[in-house]
Structures are given as structure tokens and as C-alpha cells.
Length: 189
Length: 253
Image 1 (cartoon, chains in turn yellow, brown):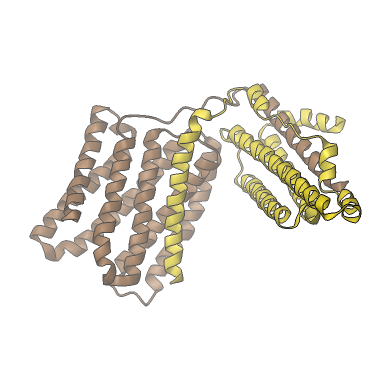
Image 2: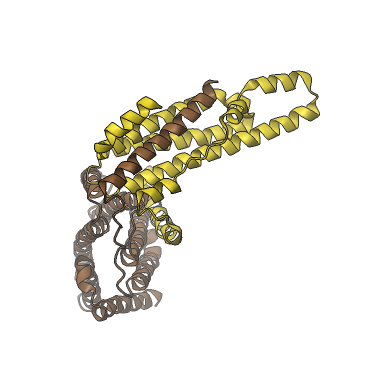
């Protein structure tokens, strides 16, 4: 019976993938961003992150300790709801930005001759784990609130760092001329 | 009655595909695909003749022609792969490595399963072997479509329709052959309808997508100039650096 399920699962996977690919790309085609020049691409991918001071506060338990010890329940509940909403918005925004970066990266490298299978697989795995962690984090925030999710958020941040290293490494390997400029920029920053 | 209707309609649709390709002068653009379609039409008509006038030979004729058809379908998958990735040398190289690994692993497993499983009777082996070979095709197509989707590679309507039609046909074949080898003769009744209906649907998809010649959009030279690419690479790396430090500092506080 497991053999039957295995073969039918492969068939359904193929069917779903082909249908998704055919109809999704047909819809997305007119809205495709013009990546004809690097300048356009950089404009299209402009990271506009919320103020850092605000984000630092979102997962900090200090405010919650204060509110839970001093304020009545009628105040605690809306506070927690509001903080949860902000945390989820921030998470979504971060995921979208990293996703946009990966899309840009894939479009940038797809015509390159120097693509390496191992490196591409590693980057894809990092990106997938990043998405999984952020999905889990989103669920955790929804279930237990933003203050309970702090440890997992740090794990997610580490993954984002890993993703950064891999993507930057690949981009630089594809075009070694960018290496010196990039190194100089990193030293200054 | 229904199966006969589907059989005739399917053959007419294949003829229509040839008429459109000849009048639009794009038959030579997809030579392997149209060769395969010609084979399907010939095989279909021959099957009808054998079934009517030499029914005792029909079963062996059916399986031999099916295997030849499967072999030709591998060639069509190769055509899809080579035509869709023609302007993307790096992705082509990656796809070649990935598909070779999938092909060798899946083919070895399929052949081992077919020859070593003592449960199957000799009469069942062709169906099981065909199912396994088509599963390998399904995995190869998953690999190709996965790469096309991952790198957002632009594909024209002709090739997209070919892949979609093939996806439907291969999925239906794997499902029906799996159920047939599992349930045996009980599934024969469903098989008679399921199989021709799936292929009829495939021919309709092919007719719509191959009505006229619509090649793959040529990719613009997104990173044609070294300077453009340098700016793009450095800018992307800078943006990721910004995101990384933003995340790290936010939660280390």
C-alpha cells in the first residue's frame, strides 16, 4: 500500500507543480519588473526597514513586565494584542524583504555561466530553512505572544546571517571584480 | 462508445496539431515533439487495425508500442529541457547534473523493483515497468519545472503548453498504472475511460498552446555589462548586510 501512495504522491506532486507553474507565471508575466539595468534592479529592491528603536522594543519583555505587574487586565489584553500585531507585521515585512532579495538574486544569476550546483543548493536550503523558521515563529507568536518567542527569533536571526553569507559569497564568486569594492565597503561600514 | 469517441477525437486533434504546425511553418522548431506525435498517431491507427483484424497479437503489440512511446517521451523531455534553458548556460549545467542524478537513481530503483519483486506475475510486469519508467519521467519533469520556477525563467506559450500537457499525461499514466497494478482486473473498467480521457485533455492543451508559433521570450541582457553586474552584486550584498545587522541588533538588545 505504501508503494501505491508513493507513486500517486509523485504523480500529484507533478500535476500540482505543473499547474501552479503554468498558471502562476502566466498571471505574473505582465507585472514582471523590468530588470534591464542594474539601476532599475536596485531601485526595485530598496530595503525600507522600520525604525530600529521600534523593533528593538517589540520583543523586549521589559514593557510587558511593567504592564503585567502594574496595570489591570483590561489594559494588559489590548497591550498584548497590539504588541502581537506589531511583531507579526515586522516579521512579515522582514520575510518579504528577504524573499525579494532572493528573487532578485535568482534573476541576477540565472544567465551567469558560473553557477555552482552545490552553492545554489546550499543557498536554497538556507532560504527554505529561513522561511520555515519564520513560519514557525509566526505561529508561535500567534499562539503564545511575542515575548515567549524571543529565543526562536534569535535562531531566525542566525539563519538570516547564514543566508547573507551564502548569497554574498555566491554573488562575489560570480563576479570577482566586485570583490575588492565590496571588501572596501564592508571595512568602512 | 465513449472510449471510441475519445479515440477518434484524439486522433483528429493530433492531425489538427500537424495542420497548424505545417501551415504556421513551425514544425521544424519542435522536431522531436512532432516526431513523437506522428508516432502516437501511427501507433493509434495500427492498434485499431491489429485489434480489429488480429486480436490475438494485440496485447503484445500494445506493450511493445507503449515502451517505444515511453522512450520517445524521454526524447521529448530532453527537447523541453534544452529549448527552455537554451539562453541560461549556468542553469543548464546545473540542470544536467541534477537530472542525471535523478535519472540514474530513479531508473536503477525502477528496474530493481520491477525485476526483483516476486509478487508480480509475468503478465503484470509490463504494466509495472511502464509505471516505473513513467515515474522517472515524472521526476525529471518535476526537476525541470522546479528549476524553471525557481529561476523565474521565461517560457513561451508553446513550451509551457507542452510541459502542462505532458504533466497531465504523465500524472494520469502514473496514477492509472499504479491503481491498475494494485487492483488488477478490477480497475480495468476505469482504466478504459481514465486513460483516454487524460490523453484527450492533453491533446486539447497542446492544441490550444501550439495553435501558432510563440517562441520563448529572449531574455534581455540583464547583466550584460560588467559594470551593471558589479553594481547589482555589490548593492545586493549591501542590502543583505543591512537586513542581517538589523535582525541581529534588534534581538541582541
